[in-house]
Amino acid sequence: MTQDAPLQLAPYAAHAANSAGRRFPEPAPGSRTEFQRDRDRIVHSTAFRRLEYKTQVFVNHEGDLFRTRLTHSIEVAQIARSCARNLRLNEDLVEAISLAHDLGHTPFGHAGQDELNSCMKDFGGFEHNLQSLRVVDDLEQHYGAFDGLNLTFETREGILKHCSLANARQLGAIGQRFIDKKQPGLEAQLANLADEIAYNNHDIDDGLRSGLLTLAQLGEVDFFARHQREAEQVYPGITGRRAINETVRRMINALIVDLIRTSQANIAAADPKNIGDVRNAPPLIGFSEPMRQEAAILKRFLRQNLYRHYQVNRMTSKARRIIAELFAAFNAQANLLPPDYQVGGEDDDARRRQARQVADYIAGMTDRYAMREHRRLFMVEEL
Ligand code: MG
Image (cartoon, rainbow, N blue to C red):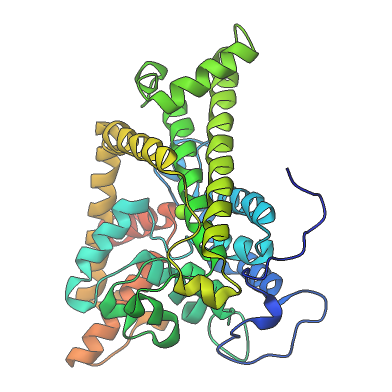
């Protein structure tokens, strides 16, 4: 299906030489492309290392073998690169976007983000996609010449997957596509769906590993049952972890193959000549309709049986309480924050900027750091 050497990029792929550039112009990199430089900056960032101790579904201390945001991001990059090579898209760009896509996530997964968003409702809200962009544009402190990582437009476009119109209007060029209702480049579209393939499948795997999901339950999902039967036909008598792994890898493969074929057909029909045509076309990277339905059923199953499992709910409710209490304490009394995060001033603008600093501080925490910080603030005996 594919070749081992990088193929010539398709004309409608993102070409590093034609990048829309960086916010602060820099000399061209010597031994790598602009998108490789982006990827390298992301890998060396502080926010990237924090992903190791941030949760997807399970909190980091619940077990050593569950996915974290770091391993999730690596899986997304793997899936996205596989597809990119087949579609002759830019692997370096899709890898950079995949590795950066979750940098703005709060501790405790979606529970943390939902709670921080409600804490911030009077101060402009909190969106994790926008926060990922904020991390790479403003919050990382690595370079002498600028705040953030000064990534290319194309990587930033891919990181900002969703955005409210109100926020898009504040963002200039990078927010414009949400106002104009246009698409990002194909690499951004691809990283988005690779994210979905990765989490649907690894959440099944982690769900089974944790015992919160059972094989009997999953047997009711036809997409799972079909691939499970296929694995049993190839390896009669296969059981346990091997049977699960053989099933999940078949599911991932089926999704990837469907995505490549469907996207190839969409691209052929739209016939874009360059990335500009891609941005003006409808979304071109996607699943076939039958596969989209299977993925929707799988998602619904996970929502009903895993994400709302009472044991997950307990952790979710604890996580929300920790975030809410941290936010309330810091926002009421900014002198509890490290000095870098204290704004000073009492007018509305100062209060707004202070709340944003609190949100940045909390969003940057790992799961265990948030728990420790909570104990430090609320437990008399903890220093
Ligand atoms: Mg993700």
